Length: 484
Image: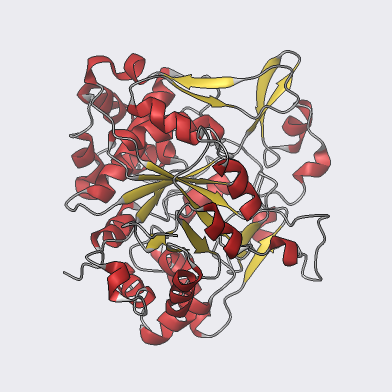
């Protein structure tokens, strides 16, 4: 395997806006791959504008959006210069297989702004992380990021076999298509977005970003590699301890005494098989320490992806009080992360940090009224010849009315609203209820434990990058590490 000039370190794309533009920008300024989370950026930009656009960052970014009229429509709809004064956020349109024009424009603007701000003022690489499960947003998120010049698109939580062609089509100014996974489908459903139809003469030349597919095993990597139409430019290989969603164990699902999925040897990464594929790959899941970065390189990987050490750094999008609560528990050895097989509506196990006052507490979870008003994780279902969108976290009677089994709703958390609450954008209900957070981290806390020892008051993204790369030979970094 021949290593390229790609970065050694990829900062993980976490949550909704936890991997913020501020975090991604700082990592990228050091020559590594800073990544923004591409989930829910339509809602993020709408809510930030309603909070007054603190610092004027969104407005600064939108002065560079290729369609000034489209940007102004979004500002006219959502910007409240003096903020909301505690009132509920205004709803924004949900994405569907055939979204409205207003939904498309808001999503394009939101993804553009986040990537543009991450790239502002430097020439380091910036990526965007998307979830294959959030298919209704894939087209608009991808195009919005490409309008801002994103360098890498990263996708997991599914089999992203259509992304290479989508990036190629958008870069050529052609319509992009994405096949939707529709439950009970009797026909094929494809979403389409035509950049020319949306932007007309204002569509700028687009550059094709590199595409990295997140996989859990070499078997999926081999499948994607065998056909150039679905072949990515590289892989991120995530082990089961990685934060957020993880793959289900191979074979029959069994739970341990703590109620967590049991993973076995079949779930281990075959690094030699990944090397044999011949494409660059990064290891993730338990590689968030300096010695593990060096080990990954020695095994033949391009480098590593690390998330938890960045989720807890000062530039992440987490509410400072939530970050400090986790750091306090980390300092005293009390921070724990459960791999909950039920929490996520997607059906994938989801890591939940056990922090009092969040939805890891049963009482906090039970106190929430079930409501689905963001809908990023809704599943399209064909019912009576039409498409309905359902989510096992929505009110049980609504889920059942749409053909779902009530048993599927047990233990499901509304991650959409909880992840918004994690970054200070939680909805205030008219009843006075405020959406509560559900925090996610990786289960390997070795890296954070070492960083809190070195930086007792907390650490920055720069601290994390410098430490993670401290054992990497200089010839493998070249001019990547910029310490100015």
